[in-house]
Length: 345
Image 1 (cartoon, rainbow, N blue to C red):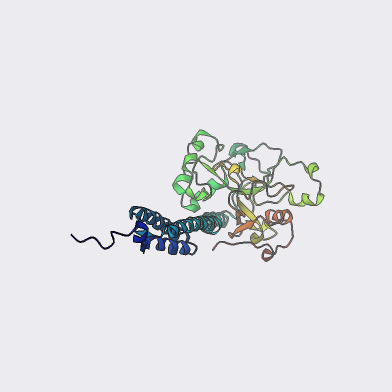
Image 2 (cartoon, rainbow, N blue to C red):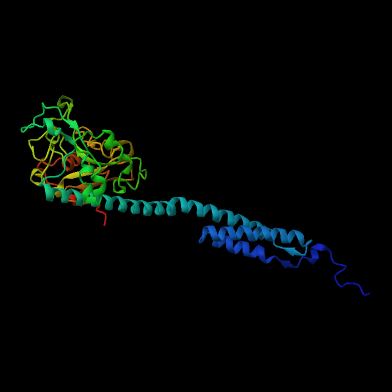
């Protein structure tokens, strides 16, 4: 048998070919900076396969250096992709999801606004906050000296106008909100009262009417000019002389600043959530008008205006202008274009 023609060559002399996988690992490693995750992972795989291929060739294949360079480039590409994703892609996705959640909340608030307007069309006033007198001791001339009871919230009053008439008929309006008959219905809170950023239907809501504390001490106010904002919110707490429609009932005529300039309902922070049938709402603090607002979603909070308009109020709005929004009789003009307000479409 004639001798093989390469029998006299050493293993190093037989290494005449370069691993194609090693070359591909460099190519994909470079592409990894354009297509970070795809190119980077492919470069890593090609580099590992090339090293194994070269190791099994017994010196007949070169390209180990190229494979190592491809591995390094692939790892760098993957790392670059992760950085880009964390810096740009993930925030963009989160922003898109938040925009979708904001639109859901805007739709819910819009339905609540329509219900409030429908209630006003029938009763010539918006629903009362829920502080009422029992029929058997309701005076003709209501005065603060008469002791009221805590009846059912305005959120219950508008149930017929959000397609919840059967649920509405199960409540006993002659009893306090915490009467066993009424408490048994807490778990039946309509989904319209659930915020998209607090998706827990536990019988509590963060859609709260704007009111002010009845036990407010004006002596603590350092700026006396702020006292003019203390009374005159959409859901007043002090009794009013409307014996036919109950206490605290506000009419469109009472909103001297205009319904388009007055906030009726806010989406408060999660820790402000209240039992939806309880006449408990967001109380305006003239010393800190953003208390309990602005942490449920990034950048601001959702509001329903008395006109039915929905606005996202950014955190950049200053305290004085917030007070002007929450007060219906302050008499100051509002220029929305100056505040970068956002109205969901």
